[in-house]
Length: 207
Image (cartoon, rainbow, N blue to C red; front, side, top):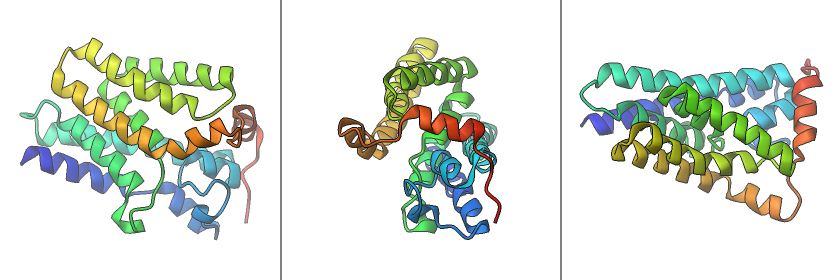
């Protein structure tokens, strides 16, 4: 029962989508604008860095907070926090409130790593930024993360259930980024330098 409740708790958090809220406030449907993704990257490109930063922080925080709450509610289940984060990722990517069409879950995935171990979060984020800049393709970061997280989860915990949870979360992220993999292969994805320039220097748009 605790397993189910942890997943449901996380799913409820995941259905909270700040990109949809920010887009609605600016009379813009982000599902039909830019890359069409309800996440921080598209929000930054369409509405500017302040909106993008808000979405990024919110999506990371909802995973982190869901994990903390699940651990508090179900302390007898060692992986309750990890399961809640899986639920958050599922809720973000497939929210019932938006006909199961949401974002790609990368920030929520980051929140899961932060909740699990801040050092793992830092290692994966810095490695992801490095590989993105090196290869000049955004999909390099989530792909590296889906490999690094399970490896680091096992190295840090030596716990099979924890590692299995990290593998499940990584598989979801890999699935949601398959289109990005195809775009990178066809050289039609967004250059990393272009995104970083928008995130760091583009002014927030005012309506």
